[in-house]
Structures are given as C-alpha cells and as structure tokens.
Amino acid sequence: MIRTIKTGLAFAFAGLAGLFLLQASAHAQDKMKPDTMKQDNMKHEKTQDDKMMHEDMAKTLFTGKFHGKVHATSGRATVYQEADGKLVLRLTNFKTSNGPDVHVILVTTKDAMDDANFLKDNTDKVELGKLKGNEGDQNYEIPAGTDLTKFRTVSVYCERFNANFGAAPLEKF
Image (cartoon, rainbow, N blue to C red; front, side, top):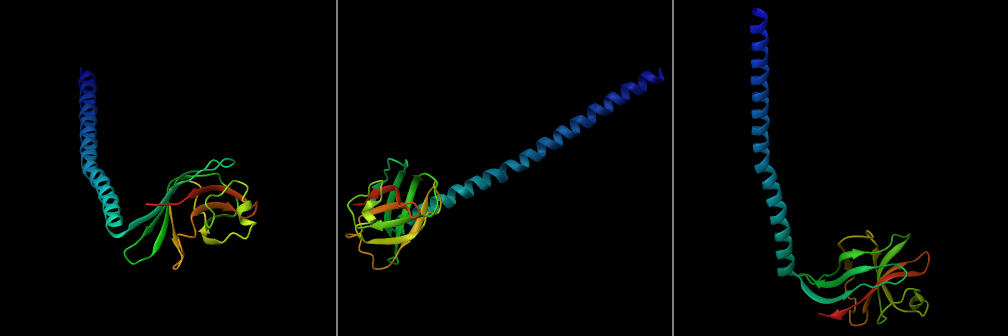
C-alpha cells in the first residue's frame, strides 16, 4: 500500500513538474514574441526610412537593364544624383557569373558586346571599382565631372580575360 502511494505521488510530482516546465516555456516564448516583432518592425521601419530618405534626397538620372550572352547577366543599373550633387550608380536585382578581376566601368559606346572588343578601339572608360559581388544590390560612386551624356553604358568587365560579362545601356530617366 505504501508502495502504491509512493508511486502515485511520484507520478503526481512528475506531472506537476512537467506542467510547470511547460508553463515556464510558454511564458518565455510569449516574452520573446514582442521582441522578435519589435526587431522585425525596426527592420521594416529602417528599410522604409532608407527608401524614403533616398527618394527624397536623390534624383534618378539614367537607367538601363543588363544583358549578357556568354555570361548570363541581369538586373538594373540606375544613376542617381544625391542632394549634395554626388553621382551614384546603383545595381539592383543584379546577378552575373563569378570571375577573376571583374570591374564595373562606364564606357562611351552605345552598348557593349560580350567579346569586349569595344575596349581595344581606344574607347574611353571610367573605372568605378571592382565588382563587389556577383549577386545583389550594390552602389558605386561616379567620379565628379563624369559626363554622363558621353559615358552611356555600364559594363561589367573581366580585365584578366578581356571579357564583357554584361552591359546596361543607359537611357535618360
């Protein structure tokens, strides 16, 4: 009989302990939810603020879509003029092949083909920098004094292999 009572108490104690742990776990999760929601809201607000700040302070000047045959390249190139007059090239939804020594340049040609022979003909170019990544949105500062009526195409160019990965002819926005 005592053995039955001890077993019954053990089960009751285990059940209470389990209930307590379950309740504590649920309480902890409830406490975490508002923080997670707060972080998500903060991210959303920051994105909205960045977007609004960018729209209010930057003027869209030129834009164009990327194309590439040998190296599948896609996305959009857009030139913005910020409130302080600085010019910025923004690549959005950008994707291209990975490669060595790849640069973003502006060229004076109307368009750029895959073989990059356009650079052999002493075509003027403006170096904007090494490609920051073969996927994703990225910004490049355009040097002051760059004549965007002359430099009409953005090229993603591999110097090592003299290959144009992709090009975006720019049109006035």
